Every structure is written in C-alpha cells, then in structure tokens.
Length: 439
Image (tube, rainbow, N blue to C red; front, side, top):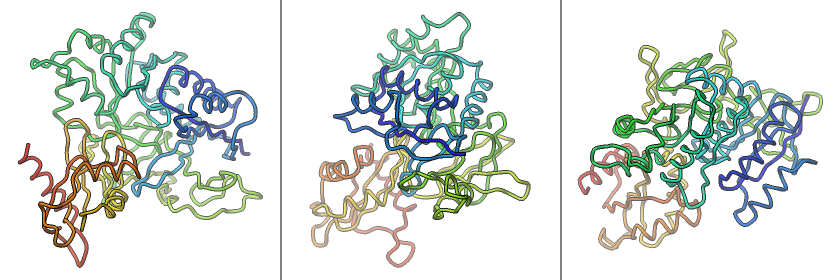
C-alpha cells in the first residue's frame, strides 16, 4: 500500500514556519496526513509558498511512497548530488526514543537549525513525541549567540519543574558562542542562560578537541553526535551507539544498522516512486523501476541484518567509535557538504587560473574550510595569479557562499601521483602547512 507525498517549500527557520511544519509533520507521523518532503523555498515567495503548502487539502506535486514512510529528506551525497531519503515513522520514533533514553528523558527543545535538514526536523519530531513545543531561534540575520541565549532563557522559564531542556547545534554555532567568552573561558552574563541546557547535541561537521574542551570548561553539557539523514540523524552519541544501533568498521568505511535506518532513496520520476534494496516501491503490479545507483548503500548480510554503508573511515575501540575522516574528497564546512570537483569546475573559467585543486584545511570555527591551490595560467607567474576575492565571487555565483574558498595559495605546480592525476592528500598537507606558517 502506498501513500501520497506532499512537497513542502521551507524557508528560513522561524516560529511560524516551525508551527506550520509541526502540524503537517504530526499528521504524517500519526498517519492522518500525507508523507512530507521539505524542499527549499524561493526567498521571495517563502512565506506564501510555505503557507499554501501546509494548508489542508490536496498536496502540491504529490508523489507516491510506501505507506510506512512519514518523511522524505533531501541530502547531499559524497558526489554533491542531491538524494531524497525515505524515513519511516517507526525509524523516526526509534531515533527520538533512543535519544531521550540516552539523555535525561523526553524534554523541551530550543530550535536553532534549518528546518529542511534532518537535525532541525528531528527537533520537531522529538518535540511532537514528547508533547512539547520548541522555542525557535529565528534565522534572520544569521546565528546570534545572545539571541540564542534569550531563547534558552525563555524555554527554561516556561518549562515545568524537572523537565529537561535540550538543543542541537553545529560546531560553527558553538564556536561563535565561545568567541564571546573572556580570557578565563567563562560565559558572559548575557550567555549565562546556556548553562540551563541539560544537553547540547553537537554534530554535522568535524569537532576539534579544543572546541569541546573550551565548551565543557565554560559549563556547557556538550554531547557529540554522529549520523546522517540515512540514520534519522545522530545515532552515535559521544562515540557510543544509541540503543538498538549497531556499528561495524570496514576498510571501505563505517557501517550502521538498527531501527533508525532509512527505507532507502527516492529516485527522480513523475510519481516520485522509490526503490529499496532492489525492489520496486509503489510501481504497478510490483514491477521494478530503474535501478538507483545508491541502492548499494543499503545491504543485508547473511544473518538478515540490514546495514547502511557510509563513506566515513573510523576506528572502534572498546565499543567507542572515532571518525577518522571521509573516504572520498568531500569537505564538510560549517555543516555543509561541498564537492571539490564542483568548485574546481567553477574556478576553471576564472581569468588567471591555470590548474586548481580545492582541498579542505582545518579551521577552529568551521571545522574545515576550503583552500584553492592554484597554478596561474601559463606565463602569468605566481605574482600575477587571480585574487581570492575573484575566486570567491565566481564560486558564490554558481554554487553558493558555503562552497566559496576562504584561502588561496599560488604555486608553480601541483604534486601528482600518476600521469595527470593530482595527489590531493599531498596538496592538502602542503596547504595546511603553508597556512599554519602564515598565521
């Protein structure tokens, strides 16, 4: 049996948007409404589109998904290609329940993340299942630590005695909170309400040990999370799997199993029909549709256990998982996944660029930032190459600001590990050394 899929335009995080989405999401979870697929709304039409899409009535651009699916969330794969992940009601419930069990039980949440991504959506799911209403930090003007602290203070004042108070952040947001600390590492008075938080879930990007130490030293109860849209968000907290989640480390990457796994990916198509483990979903008479290239990400072993194969390298020591980096070239910066090849393509046409290799380098605020290592066009010499401003403008126009490089290094050649094949690992190492020397 199938159910309809409503595609919901979602704009910047706001209390109004969160309330409207909560109504539709609650209906998707309890089965009284269609499944939901949040999609970015055009900025100029955000309010009207969101209001129209969340009103009762016929879903806009309805697709078809299995009846158990409540939410379809678009994510970016390691190649930068967007994928739609189908999440069952049972998986969302399992994730929310396991999170509450690992923390201090169901509680109230402060929402400071985008509503179109799994981490922000999970704040709403957890709130629905806990019968609480999140306090929303508006996204207008970017993340403001003082405004965030005011939202925490409001949530603390309004909650019943003994009810836990939580939030979820990405490392960039936490870094901006800590920038306001004095030399003694203490939170200033305007940020003191943050100590009321019983847990700050931190995920979406690499987290430096220094950032964690400073946050915990300031009195913040930070819990690191690891997961992805395919696992309903974080499923490993402080290195340990949530209840029911299994972790295995293989040479090609970390693998995850358990009740939080997604059903699979929803391929493009006029009806939005999906495939799971090679089986047709929502197709006439059970006919199989075209194979999806990412079906291989979900596999079932000889014991009947279904696994999701990530592309993250990891180490498992006495049951504690450590992530060592990605097995591909994608750079996660400020919670955004950026494919270097796409950035390089955008830079190839910039005047003065001969060869270019884009790599990620460590950064205290963003986890990693992009560095463009450029060999100037023939005959130009390193002193006549392009400027960082020009490169950032070119990338921002085509890919958005998150993909724009923050550093530029001009070199005479790029190291290779084969005929015409750039050695990215060596480029990354040299860039990190050069930038560290220049700071």
